[in-house]
Length: 190
Image 1: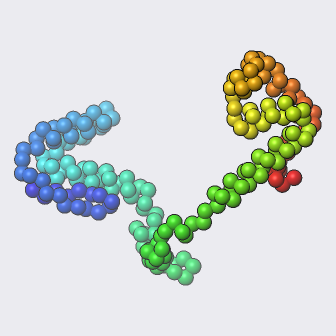
Image 2: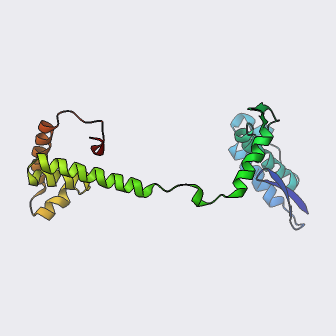
Image 3: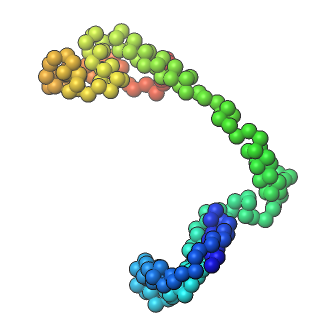
């Protein structure tokens, strides 16, 4: 027996063996009954054939697809937009995508971003080291820029966590004395 199944908005025929599918149809009916709201349970009908069951699924699949894609250029009638019909625009898009759809089409700016981040990091470190005591600057750099937790930093320094907490508060107060207003510019911009 052949049944039609909707996949990617196209109907595909699938060959299945001629067997008794009553158990599958019963399970489908029970599932649809369980999913239906209480006031709609009387309207649920039992499918008599496998094709009827798949027609229900096909209808649901199509409705979901149509809900999101009904306004796309492929499904609407052609209208004049900028001197071209929508069908012409779709054809132009398909021609362009067939030409070269490779990774080389998209520039890689990750190196530039890494360099900019490194420059920003170095500038902030330089400003902190210039304006704060060395141990306070290193503490702020380690915790806020390098992401080391205060507990881990305390272990590295061989002191208690509360000592680091007090030192951090002092360093933040001194920083706020030097820079009372937050800057909206990145450090590389000035």
